[in-house]
Image 1 (spheres, rainbow, N blue to C red):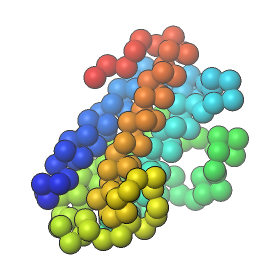
Image 2: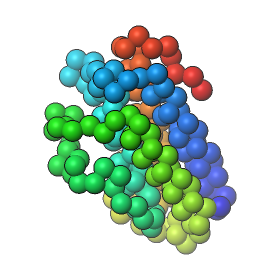
Image 3: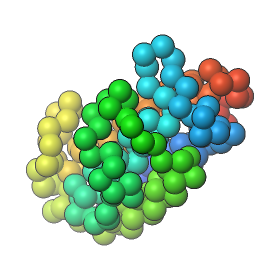
Length: 159
């Protein structure tokens, strides 16, 4: 693995475990509880799977969407008409994370210097910048899920 990716890969690995820890003890029903008009843990977890798949594809990896086209028209939680089970979300998270780990290990300095396929709110417009931003994005949303645990009377997320 390219040395510039090692700290990001370590955080991605930590986040892989922390999402699972955040969902631990939740039922499908409790994962759909919303704080007011906010998002539910299930919606955020699906979003995280989708974001990791976007990252994987953005760095040249391949994987079909684990939920097919059932969520293709979803932009907000209010668009959700179908939810995968937490078991399906966990399995999709593990699969995309494993493929992402493998693809990250293959990237070279030339790959990392390529222009990102999208503009993210950071100065680094390369693939390395995209990886860095989406690594932070994981942590932001995992923190939200860890707070949503408290709404359904679960203990704090464990590291």
